[in-house]
Length: 106
Image 1 (spheres, rainbow, N blue to C red):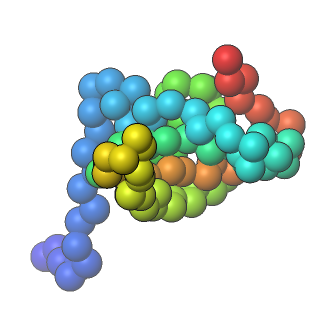
Image 2: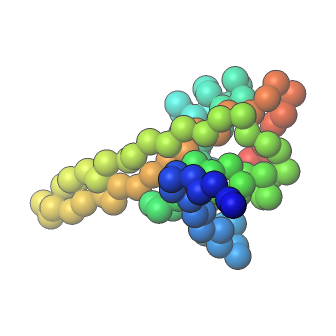
């Protein structure tokens, strides 16, 4: 007789193309200071989870992250030439690597 566990199963959606998760590296002044300490910043899909991001980094860049943190980018109201607009928000991921590992961002 099997014992059933009441924990929920984790279902991770893995797309066929990992570039759908990692949109682009986030190249800013703050991100460049962090990259010296093996922390890299990427813009990711709004629906991406930490495990999906970790797997995508492993498949694309061939390094294994030790930790992934996610932060929301808020939408911001803008004003240009007297017209109101909105900069869209999004999601960014901080990817931590082991000492000696690096990602070459072109």
